[in-house]
Length: 191
Image (cartoon, rainbow, N blue to C red):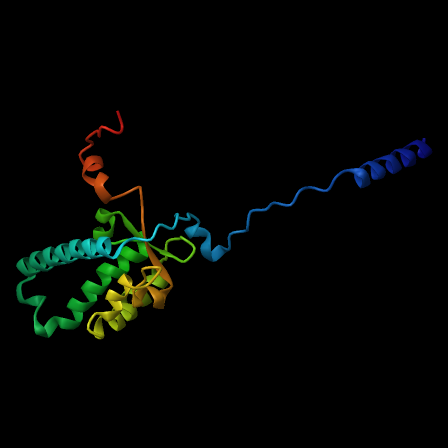
């Protein structure tokens, strides 16, 4: 009986040795740092005109915020004495929305998104240098760093180059279909 079990063990070892090795997966492992940024957006670079449109909407939103807070708080905000707090609010608008959502409300309406070079949402760690240091450098030289998007092949301003970001078109928001989706109007293409 001991001989049978030893013979059986040898057969099992031979079968395991002859069995094909399990196939290795070809998908790259996602690091824990990028685990929350796994969605990769297709890179479709936005035009400078569309970016200007999105910035115009952001200026209108910020102006509305300024008017409302000025009406509520009076001289406690938006005066020369409160300039540091006011600048913090404006930068917070851009850093918070870009860092957490990948776009400002203006970019959302225009159908744009800020992504890193690989097409993932940038996160707050990239949004801070882009929106604070990058915009300061791009604007302080008479706006040349912002106008750079017209001449750059990747349509990057200096603030994009500093942070390693791109502004792309997103088919899932904004653009010409924004109002149609907002009011649930059917188009002739969908019929």
